[in-house]
Length: 421
Image (tube, rainbow, N blue to C red; front, side):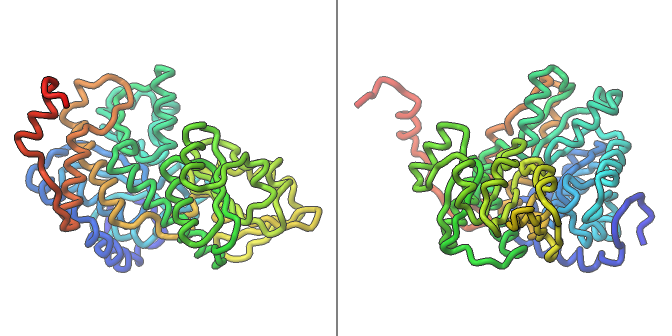
């Protein structure tokens, strides 16, 4: 048994976890190549790094890569329901990486685990939702000055971090990994789309074909959800506040209506916006008996479950990740995964192929910060274009896909202005 400090559910799950980690690694060829280079070059040698991420098989392979690069790594969970306990056990017992995460942990345990990651006194942090950074800035400001920088995995976290920068409270540079094209165009759209439908079906086993499926938002994540639900035969409605995204949804063939109207007819509702109270009391009041409500945005605040609890006269646990709220008028509304990330709480999260690109961005962004952070302001930065394109080429190579190259004549034409028509 490992002697490293950790807080996990069951060390005996380590063998099972290692098998699952290595299975995911087979589909993460880009990260494999980075890990091999890192093990030789040690670009993160001596860097203390705390990560607050979903504790999944894919995350485990990122942690292995960072450690191979010389980093002193600690991992805690970014969501109380997304931890895979076998993965946490394997990281501790097989790879000697401290983990502070237990599936289903309560709020106090969740934040105590974040504090354990803070106590590691990191020089670089990795976040999925900005909870680690916000905890440091609010409760441990003395540690902020020693931070080289941070990386952020998800839309919600980038929104929070940009707010910090705008309010002049951010004290180090942050790389918005979420905004890399090899992240949001693939992870958010294809990963969230597939895994959200997977979570809904695992929790309910309903037939989606013919049902009225309501998606709140039409960003990259919501686009993927709408696309996959439509592919399953559902009739998809989109609710949006952004006129350009609403127009895009309309011209993609989806009905676009306000949530107040969609609430009357929807069978299944999924939020993925990054905002608060997207579905609230006024909408619950209009829903039909048997409506199913889920969230695929980072935090459970997208569903106003306090409103729903006040409306309910009884709450029943039907099965794992499926709760029934019985209302006074006889209607029942069903909530999946306690309103938390349904794709991770009720399913396996994103496929390894898309997380390969996301976590390649994380690893290379950490390397970039270790080298260049001193030249950066206290702001939120995009992933350097060179890193983004390198990852895309590596992923194409791993998929045995070849592309054309510009000829010298074509390059000359694109760089000139005299030739015209």
